[in-house]
Image (tube, rainbow, N blue to C red):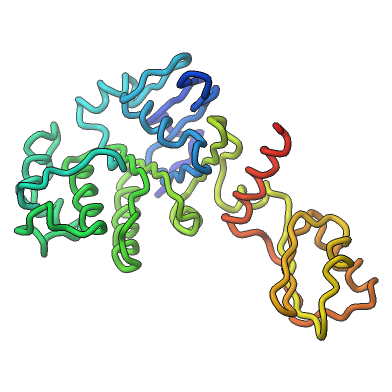
Length: 307
């Protein structure tokens, strides 16, 4: 059972953390807590600061200002105690060994190791145990990285683009395993470009933009924060785009054949004005934004604000 953040001790605390590389501020005053049992998605466009944030959490970088605390100590201390497992995009795998050999090594080195067979079964790599690492596909390499990240009884699992290269079946199996980890009280933090994964998997979504936290909430709350709704309908005959683009409160507009799609900050007013044009839309649909659309709307609004 998930526990509300306010009722638990933080697993991770970022307190006013900033990190710059020359003139580029990769992380800008980041303050947040992560709590036991949460599955948290970290979203943001390229250059938003996601990788830098994970590097700071894992002690691979040191903040210029502020502090990062993991399980009440430094990131390095938490990792040394076996609290944290990580699966990162960077860093290669040893190619001249078999899959079982590299997983066995990871288990042997972990302060709180799990049985090798259990780790391999959970990662779905038991059938390729005797294959050389250098002969694996991209998706198989990702599953091996996951096995290395979960070679011990970690309390926090950090994943950077974990399902890149996996097929649909492998991705579903991977996230089923992650749900089980969270249900056991572990915290799962993952950065992803697959926004449908964040929508389906995460209890909580963090949206970063130029190193700053723009939004923090459930997927439903992030969608509501965008403050827009989708409108779609079909028209008979030619579509008068200039006239439709003049409808009130639009934030996005597109036409495909006779199908019109738009986003509006006041869907009721937009639809009322649509009928006021003397048009009779067929198959009219009005719905909230998906997470991907909400993400784009939030980041574009921030770009416009800071331009």
